[in-house]
Image (tube, rainbow, N blue to C red):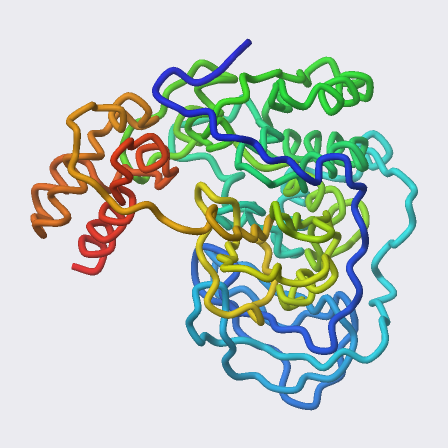
Length: 440
């Protein structure tokens, strides 16, 4: 069974919603669309207060290559082009729409008919990439990098592989698993489209061995000899690009913080992104909705949703029975990499894949104790760093030395903090150092 070579941990999976079929979330009364839902320049509004929009109407256009357009996921009236609180807790530029009905742009194909690449010989790699860019498809996990940018190889590099990430190693999250179980055909066509656009000869769907049903289904569905279903050891952070490339292709990327799978000839995207690519190219559908898990041990009805982008997070939590009566911490993401939300009115965005509600003792941090010099943080670091040292340098505000010790290469996976028997907030201090260096 394949896996990456350096570090890693085995947190309790808590896949409480793995057997829960995806439900279509109800429409909110008001939808909020932050203009930054991707890495790169914010989108530029093309609508104003009082404008009438439908599902699929362009409301903000891309500002250059490293940007992505935003489309309305609801029909109604633009209430404001101003600011709103987003997942970061900050008030940032956003478009706010009052929902009125559910009218879609007629150009969007809403049928369930499967379209394949073989049925469309008129498509070219350039056209596929252009449609992905037009649809506003961006990484639908933590990164949010516009997908069309990933399809441009660095100078002197030729893509030979496209890897779909179906590992979902973050505890609690099951949205990608349900997507694979429910839309396997579309995901595989999306992979073929990405291979075609990248002019890559090999495709892989990487799935954790703890998901045997998804592995079996994908193997049954594959009809392309150039696509392989790869079973990976269910180790965290198996789903990160660097570790996935190592596990599937046996290629290790540079430790430089700017390194990407493209440097070693690979494109890595999530299964959710592949599904969005299928809908963009074959159904003329921009990115207006996504699969989201809402889960927690004390939630009354944890669930997987197909939710419209712009839906307030509290709307999905209420559909699961509401916030449990206890001390709670609500995370956008899972417990390893998720960020605590200070405002539950923040909306679902393109990269929102999981909402985790940690309650009671699970939400509380232990009191940090002195470092034991046990080196467990070093053993589990998938980047081969020395987290105890980086944290100490951050505490002492020795930013230059922290940079020399490669603090900027930290991928913020949280393995070090998880493994520390003294409960030291290693990742917190490392993040402080990274911010201090980036702001200089």
